[in-house]
Image (cartoon, rainbow, N blue to C red):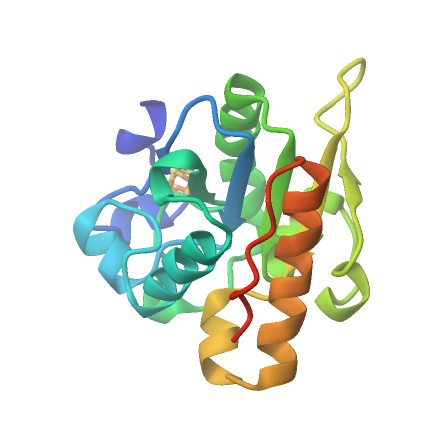
Length: 190
Ligand code: SF4
């Protein structure tokens, strides 16, 4: 993969491992987060820390397993101290994600958190405004748009582990399952 040795932005110098993404190359759902954290940087795998464990639980609650979906990030290398991605870093890295989405051609993208949602939707709206209904991701001229569901990032959910936030995320995932004609388990969002 091209980005394993990429140094197009400054994060190439500070990372331990690039974190390309992993999962089913024919996935119907692609989860897109913001960028790798410390655990991900150490292992070269996406969403393997505490937030990743919560994402696993969300995926399992949907009646799916990690191998059924594809999981990746906007940035392929960890920003130091988990700071927010900078616009130039996103600009340099976004092409890799666009290529991944072009290859996988998912039916639905789940954007985890404001950075992923705003980047893919090219908007400055808040996650609270964007979540709850499908938005459209436009891959480029002449290409079919892909439905995008924005929802809270698992790391945010861990910080604000409130019943209403968990219910909102579960509502978003139920909407995704319904759109894909998949069964909606009863136990999620607890
Ligand atoms: S974050 Fe993206 S653009 Fe920057 S060095 Fe890593 S792979 Fe390259």
